[in-house]
Image (cartoon, rainbow, N blue to C red; front, side, top):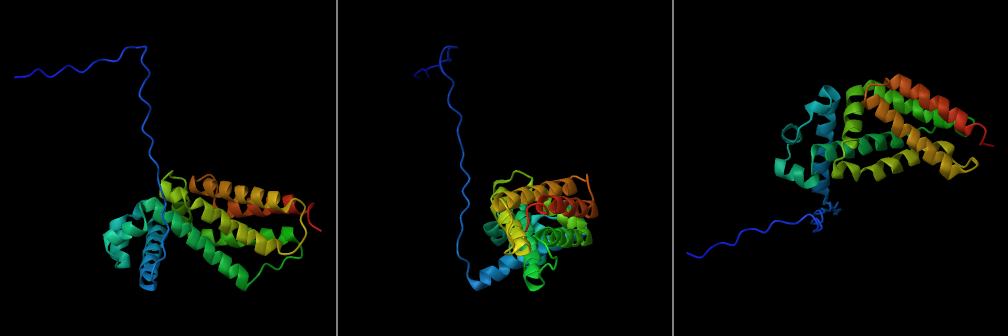
Length: 218
C-alpha cells in the first residue's frame, strides 16, 4: 500500500496565507406589479410585528404567515430580518415625506420649518416607540443587507430637510444638511439604545436645528 506523504509544516520564516475575502453584492431588479404588492405586504407585516412586540417579535416565519407570502419568496426579497427591517425604516420615513409634501411646514424661517419637521418625526416615533427602536436596531446590526439601506435613509432625511428649507438661502447649505442628517441619525441611536425618549429626541433635534440654521438663514 503506497504511503501518504505527511503534510509539511510551515516554518516561522514562511509568510502566512492571505485571508480569504468575501464580497457581498446587493442586486436590484425590477419587480412586476404582483411582486411589488407581495413585497409591500411583507414589509407591512414586519412593521406590524415590530410595532406590537419590538425587534424580538419579528422573525421571518411569522412575517411569512402574516403577509401570506411564502417563506422562500420572503427570503428572495430580503436576505435577513435586519435587511427587511431596514427597508421598513426607509418606508416609514418615506411616509413622513409624503405627509410633508401634502402639508408643508409653515414656519417663517428655515430654522422654524426644520424644527417642525423634527417635531413631527418625533411625534410619529412617540406613537409607535417599539417600531422606531426595532427599525433603528436593524440598521445598526452590521448586516450587509441592512447596511445597503443607509443610502436610502440618508436620501430620505435629505428630502425632509429640502422640503423644510425650500428656496431659502442658507450659507453652506450642503454642509448644514449633512450635519443635520448626522444629528438625526445619532438621535435615533440614542433612542434605540434607551438613552433618550422619543420626546427628548424631538426636543434635542428642534433645539439644535434652530441654533444651526438661525444665523445662516436670510
